[in-house]
Image (cartoon, rainbow, N blue to C red; front, side):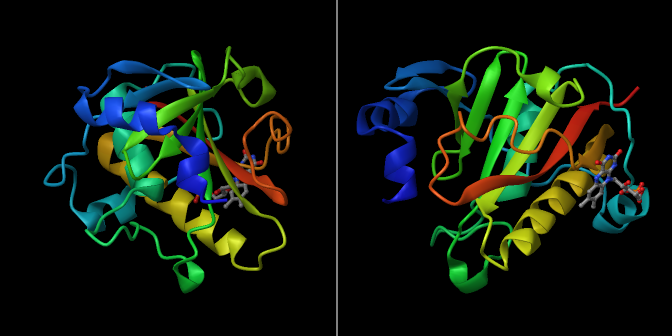
Length: 201
Ligand SMILES: Cc1cc2nc3c(=O)[nH]c(=O)nc-3n(C[C@H](O)[C@H](O)[C@H](O)COP(=O)(O)O)c2cc1C
């Protein structure tokens, strides 16, 4: 099944195109929130971000605001070209990855084509992980030998954005699979790794 069609209904998409960032739209199967576009001219120089990149094993409980969330998700799996290709490369451009944001207000799937997120689970599920302000889940086909490479590209891009924006983050092998049965994952897909994020202290 075409993944984008699976994820967002036509009605929700049509409404999303007309809506402002941050606006929640009632879509079939879950609200859709348009994310603010990342500021492409912002942030620290790349070499500074590389120099600052580090993991913090205990990010705080503070929530990550929508501007940073939009930028983080775009850094992980956004589309950066007119032809629909992504910020990260994928083998044969198969694009078989998914990112979920576990927040206090539910679990959201990133929709790269719309630069939006769709609620896929209700409630605060961060307790299944380390209770950080935001937990990102990176999912992909578990038997694809390229999947680990793909999710590694995603968490590194997010780590660099965190270095740029002064956010704390840590890649974590935690609670893996805790939500997989409830997430809208195609057969054979699993959460391979997570990344906890919070505002800097
Ligand atoms: C694939 C992967 C899995 C990791 N799993 C955990 C983990 O479960 N718990 C944790 O506290 N840190 C975890 N880390 C973070 C590493 O411990 C950390 O990156 C390492 O100590 C190096 O520190 P740095 O990221 O600050 O360079 C993981 C990192 C990677 C790349």
